[in-house]
Image 1 (cartoon, rainbow, N blue to C red):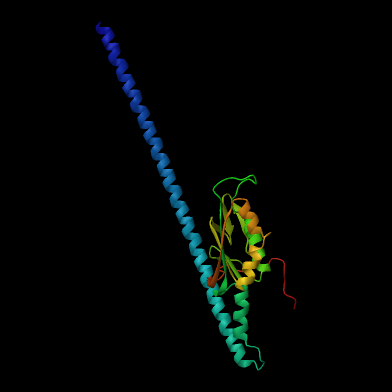
Image 2 (image 1 turned 90 degrees about the horizontal axis):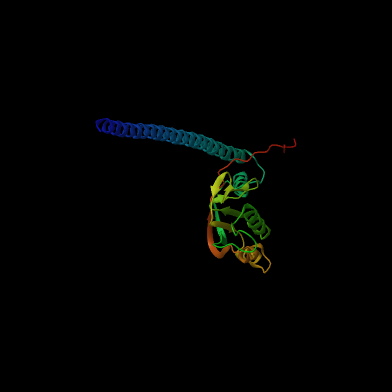
Length: 234
């Protein structure tokens, strides 16, 4: 009887020891996972800060160069006896390129992913939809366009990345607020005709809202134009 009791005690002790070892192993593994996650988050934060610093430095350099160019044009205008108003012309060209904030009359289009699926398939707003809306506004005479405050210029890339869209390298999600400056009635008529692409999107379950505005402000483009293949002809 005493021998059986002894075996029972030994068995209980072994069981408790096994549980203790298991708990210790899990604790160590959890600690390692936590440390690894913490290190990864710290590294990601460091990378984001480095990229932010690079962006800020590049943006500051761009601003400095623009200021130098403005001053140079002003000096040139003083010396030149022609009738060309260089400062005004520079501002006009920079406005066309998207390097200035602009304001004026126009329309605001808000497109948002639908709640339910249709026979067409998903009713999300894709990059191709945004391209078609932008082209439609350009054909209606839009002088400046932005999507969620991202200025649309000649080299703007609009691409899909899962359920979000990348515009000028930045992630943009639904709803998409598209602002366009131009002759209000012409822009409105262009996007509301019976067979317009916005009508098709509505039929497929996308939420569409169009507003006329007396005053819209569109922010400047903060990127840099680059040409890989086109060269100036001397």
